[in-house]
Length: 300
Image (cartoon, rainbow, N blue to C red; front, side, top):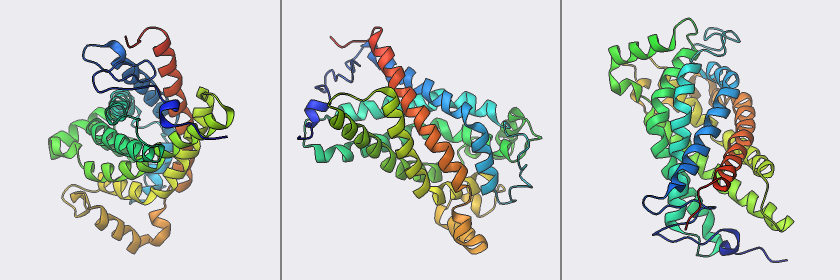
């Protein structure tokens, strides 16, 4: 049995009005709301459900150590920041991801499809991080200082470091997210295509979720050192060398003080959270996109 071509797997698209599972991209078409709302719903769901695991991972990676950072106490510290940032962050990612996929088209040979998914995911991360990083900075500081309120931490950052303080770690976050997405999204799309080919029909949302869990867990494991560097930069004292945002320097400091184990601190909760998160996030996205497309946003 031959694998379906790219054109058979995906609906036809054009630059003037791409069709993305019924999502219209021509100017003024309402289909733009589908990836926007579906992505936002998926992002908010996964961030709030898995927040305790994220807190534990952050505390394991913090320079003061797990116990000093709070241990298992107050695992919902910083959740308001995550709640406010989740919807626009995920919506911005998927809006960009779907648009770039649409813009690049799918009419070329199937072996180029992973490259297009990589480019789309990278563009999505660059845009989404403009929203994600300020939320992440406030959230992570709250996670290692559970006695401080989220608004108090936000005000303190603005007062002491200005707007620039909210974007501390932007470069390290992008450098973490792009490699992560370069692994996760092509793998997710490829697993879905393979499953679809094997069963000779499109995958269900739960099958997309399983593919998302496998892709997310693998991507999480290989990018953990970059996540450690990002955490150290965001939690560093203002004015310190680490706070400058040099990823290689942060990795070198961790290597010198803790060795390989330090570079993979928080690996288990990170892989667990992102595997489960990939299941919820990508499964919920596909399900929400299907439902929204079915109830009223069709390309003429």
